[in-house]
Image 1 (cartoon, helix red, strand yellow):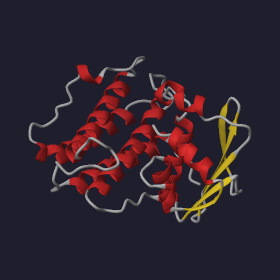
Image 2 (cartoon, rainbow, N blue to C red):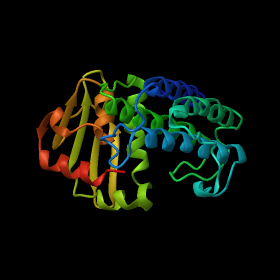
Image 3 (tube, rainbow, N blue to C red):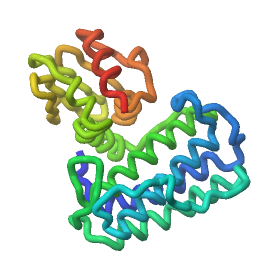
Image 4 (cartoon, rainbow, N blue to C red):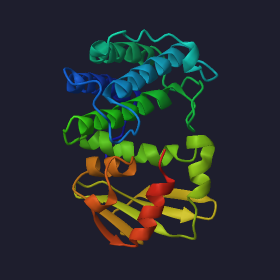
Length: 250
């Protein structure tokens, strides 16, 4: 599996933003987004573009605290048909902020890694997942780059102890039960549920339940709730997998 740097994530997020903007250009902004209930395509694009600019502002300022998005002006266009171009403009805004700071500079972040480098990785996978949402909304099967997807699976495991104030991690406990996530393309992980939380490691070993998929892309879409478990080959305790997926949704 690839070792990622802050610079790698920064380059990749710009590319992904531009790919998402190209995907949604010319499409009906009122199209529903099944994987984001209550949103249409325009709302999805607006949310994604706002998050890019919000993160860029905090990185640029090395903010020690969270900025409140409701108090900020992100220059959202009046016409929804202009959303794709506005989304694309956010790539340069975000990349300039990320590349203008040292990766290990301390700042506010909602995950465990409270440094600039948190945001390059987080914004990459924020965009990857919402790009998948957009593709699903317009009838395209998402396909994520294998290296990006493998990093995205691990990022979710890293984020869960901090999401929703740490609620998922408090729920994701057990007595040594294991869940194995395996891609035919080579990436694989084993999650172990423990009384105080969970841990994960890279491993090809099976678990009490094992999910087998063709690619890391398939696994990232599953762990982020963009695919259903019955789309995959499941060996072992399927109830354990269903429990994990319902309790790890963020």
